[in-house]
Image (cartoon, rainbow, N blue to C red):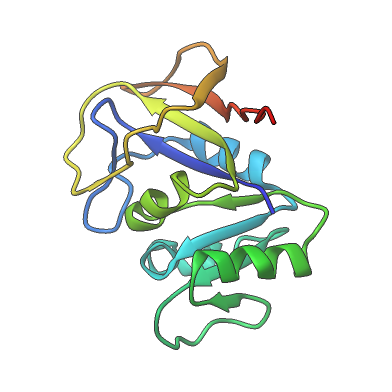
Length: 172
């Protein structure tokens, strides 16, 4: 099953500090909800823990949490022990909808180089924030296919960008 990554990052690829977002951008949260609606969201345990309880699990989505250990999750939230297991669960449980990896940093690093990762939905946040978690470098093969206008919310300037992986055909 092909999947996408969705994330917001600053100009140095910063995505978080102390397991929290370093900014509050309402339009980005709405964008996340719109893009992932009805799909599957795959996240690491720390990302799951960082979501305020009143917002989890994300409604109208299949929620899958990846953890090496056993953890207790609410009914309807699935546990996987690897990215590949999460993708199999997504394909089996929500086969007609897109799957999205939503964080954190180590899962992004593993996911972005996975052969089934075909799209990136990135909110580019203008500025450099105090972060201790970072999005990985974009590997060769991802091309920017959509770039929104700059949007300002409070003091923060940002834009929505989409990348797609170029799939090379092999000659025989």
